[in-house]
Amino acid sequence: QVQLVESGGGLVQAGGSLRLSCAASGRTFYPDAMAWFRQAPGKERLFVASISWSDGIQYYADSRKGRFTISRDNAKTPVYLQMNSLKFEDTAVYYCAAKALPTLDSVSERVYNYWGQGTQVTVSS
Image (cartoon, rainbow, N blue to C red; front, side, top):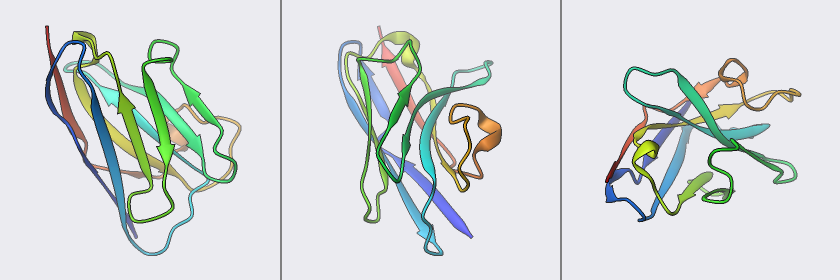
């Protein structure tokens, strides 16, 4: 079993930055890709960014491109999300996810097999 645990969330003023981390524990696991999703109160969970494990190719939601950067680390903390120039509308619970198998789709929730519990990001305006 693979467990993912997010950290790094918190309260930040608009224009500020946060760096989220996702740690993995459990059995040794080499994902096909890892991603971050976000869910605002009362809204559906949405794709933020993903990164391929083999070649580091990244995908971003258009609305976050240029402000957010996903990166990977092959140690205990396999994926990060650097968030800059934060806006009020970035307020959400951010989830780390891992995809076990190669798929053409890297942005849909349904292709991700493992999820963390989420970390709250609150941006004050």
